[in-house]
Length: 206
Image (cartoon, rainbow, N blue to C red):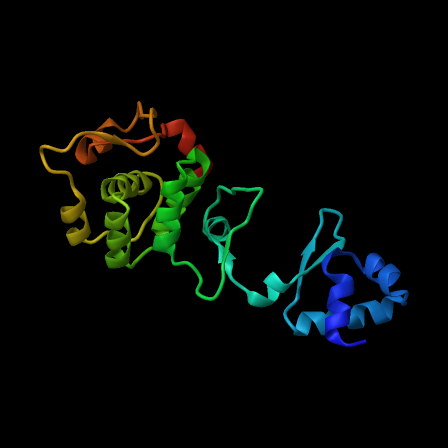
């Protein structure tokens, strides 16, 4: 059986038993065929809570790539789920790109989880460029100062901070429309940005 025929028959989510049933073969042969597909990059394996293995067989696995959500979940203690996974093929998104994406979702949970990215971000030139392109410089600055209160983060450059700080005539804006903090007024005042989190919201980082 050639690899293309094998892939067409097994594409989807399989167990070792379902592979045996579909191909009408024994367990040893099923493992052999799964290994063939794995070597081609088509197979990803995960374990269920009962320690049973499940195999996802798809072209997307071969293409590689990561979604913004996978990157956030990799670095953050706060895990997020989404019914649709958008993967970026070829070049993996940077942490700066992922943070800006999180802000643009306007999702309380996703933005909260993305605060952990400040522990790893060190390309402040890229982050400022992306933030400016999306008119999010002050939001990024305010969230950075918030992240500093709950974890150790990479030090922001003075150039970023100076360029992002609001001018006197700037008006207050929201990270998420209608939400403002009761506990972080000093940060809101510095950046003229209403933060959507209170101390209680950050307890998952403790």
